[in-house]
Amino acid sequence: MPKGIYKDSTPLTKLLLSGTIAFTSLLIFYLIGIAVVKLIYHTDLSDLAKSDPQVFIASHAAAFKLFQVLQDIGFFIIPPFLIGWLIERDSFGYLKLNQKSGAFGYLIVPLILIASIPFVNYLAAANEAMHLPSSLKSMESWMKEAENSAEALTKVFLKSESWGDLVSNLLLIALLPAIGEELLFRGLLQRQFTELSKNPHVGIWLAAFLFSFMHFQFFGFFPRLILGVLLGYIYYFSRSLWLPILGHFANNALAVIFYYLSSTNQISTKADEIGSQPDEIHVAFISLAIAGVLLYALYRVELKYRKTNSLT
Image 1 (spheres, rainbow, N blue to C red):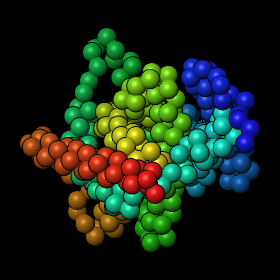
Image 2 (image 1 turned 180 degrees about the horizontal axis):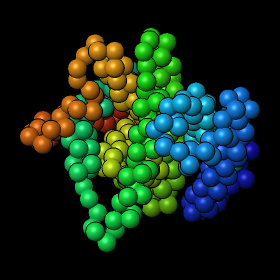
Image 3 (image 1 turned 180 degrees about the vertical axis):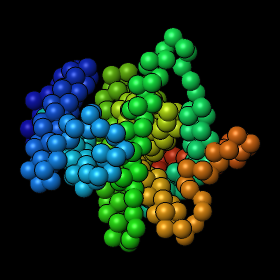
């Protein structure tokens, strides 16, 4: 099989290539999204800047959902496959989508994410309570505006009143981002940061940092960073992108299901409230310890699986 034209390029060149392709694709699909939404829904999304974000987004929910799907495809899905082909002429191989894991791995990964929920929620509550120095008040105001817009969009997407809405949300909010974001941040960027730094732990943390930063929800930066780190180590230990995709989906799906059950008054507890109270720090650290033990168990199981399969 002929190698890709960038196969022998330096790690930095590959990283710059990835950034250029990803943001070029994002721009192209942004313009496509604006045009398609205007054609189908007669909605000009540029009017968002002139309106109350929550009111405007709520009144154009379908348009925003279509726009988000196109953005996800353009930024998270197409670039990794294109870059994998340019480097190795084998996108599935480059992104580790052709690697298998032991059956136990598929069972334990969702448990890792579920176990981490109280710790992540406690960290989220602490993150929300943070304030920048008074000299950076204007920056904090901008961050809050970005947070409010993102929150308004999330609430519109999560709104569900029927089983059909729930299934739609599981596809749009849980499955599509799980596949797309893991392709970009773990399958592509974590690998390239690791090659550049020659240190897998640096690669994991840098990819997780970008994963959190690029959501532009700064008052949820640290919990999302930890989520990215967990997914990064799941990828590193398993050598397969399917396990972090599964973990990411489990995390998102749980939030979608809890929101549906809460909004339809079937339960009173919200997923983001578990372990979030200031006096629940002991619950948070028990949660972290359990997630850590399960992550170590995954490491041992995947190590044994690879040794066994290398001998057969």
